[in-house]
Length: 459
Image 1 (cartoon, rainbow, N blue to C red):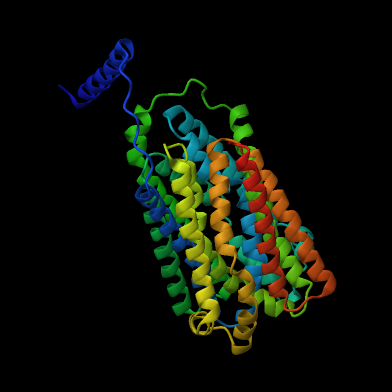
Image 2 (tube, helix red, strand yellow):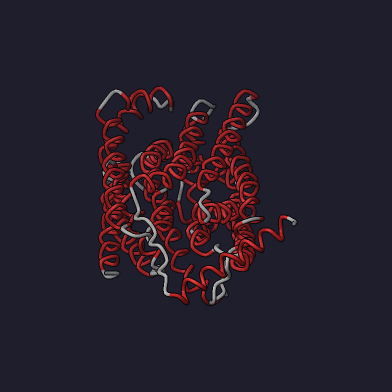
């Protein structure tokens, strides 16, 4: 008997047994309750992936800070290139959560893959228009108002990041498929590939001495994310050839109307959230010592992101596990450990000589820049805990397919953050980096409060 015939016979036998059990009144066995070890098993590969990915900005800052004209290229990267690239790709970021929920059968997977591909192409065209046409001057420069010294460096960096949006769309779609079928370890493996490619490119460019800091950063990030796409696709082949094709198609197949209703609020969420990146750059550009603040910002923001990366990973864990028996209290306990631990890590850096070792030694900032960081890092300490809480609450809403509340909460976040930033610009508050960190913390706290209210309505 061939392998395919055996598989079909096994599936037929399973369906027959299920029908017999139903006819004679046998109750199916109740699934086991969710345990902390189950949450940890699902979380740690994703957390490792996010930690590896969050280390990328830190590594880029460490290399660029050691190249000529470091302040200009760091400011261009953190003030123009990365904020704009993030904003352009924002509508596709939540494809990870969407794929985790929807890529459960072959027909839905194929439909969603097509939608992802076309979305990635559309966003790449937008990126190209901003990077290669006069829209760079009329839109990007006009909106951010950066110091004159960093404008051309920003243009070059944005051009080198052209593959970014499509690559992010494709790899997050395939990573969602892996998570949906319990292959989250492969997500971390893909991110490790990305980090290896990024570090290899950074070292090669640094040793050659032939490229500017912004060119080194743009090239390394682009090649790294392309490497991650390849890894995600290779890892997904086993799922596509096996369990995905065997999955039972849903009664209500995935179609455009259903997908738009589910995904549009999710797409608006990172779009509005990441709008704070260029808005923050525009605010720093209009406050005291704009060039100095913009040069420090990518390294400071990189550390804050790194300390909260494990909390970001919790979103997909909650989406995946919230439907299991007894999940709510277990997920809450895990959240408490995650929130306290991640903010405690940032507090440890702020209160000990680790700050000098990280910013002065590893990141190679000047003494005067390290002193500025020493004054403002305290404002960011609640941020990692708020990130974990936000991921937990968002995950519950996405699992329940009540994504409208997620978008509403982001509007609250953006409103509060913009009010603080406008106040900082109007009052010319100094240090300006404390203003942007305060805006992010207060906005995130308001966002979590709104999400909590929406989750309570679920019952």
